[in-house]
Image 1 (tube, rainbow, N blue to C red):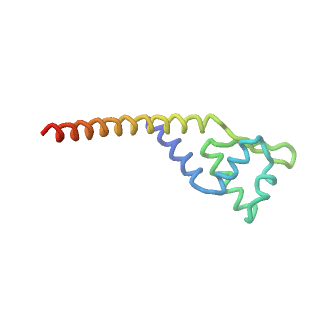
Image 2: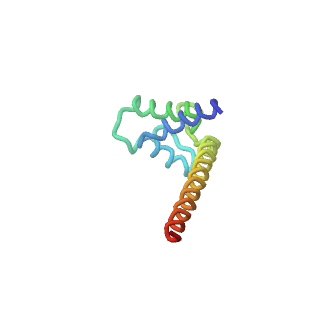
Image 3: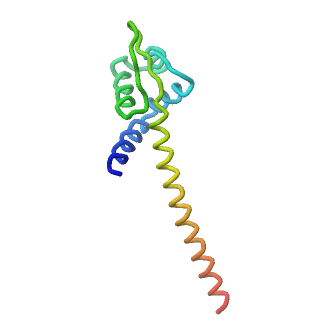
Length: 114
């Protein structure tokens, strides 16, 4: 579990930034060159490359270079792990809230009986 936690921390850190989330949204449509990904952002290319580095280190994207063009593509497995964790958390909290709801209903019913 600690290894999973480490990976989730890196993924959530990467997705915490709006620029990186925008890059991931673009990559959902398919692979793109670094130049294409950087075009919508008003920042120097070295700064943008730092964002790509964070995404790559988190496992959310991978890149490869052909000639002078570096192309990036999304790695869906990282998102699948994150989705599983979120589903587990939602299930846990739904169960807790259901138990709270049952307790409160029981409490109200006991008050009505008195």
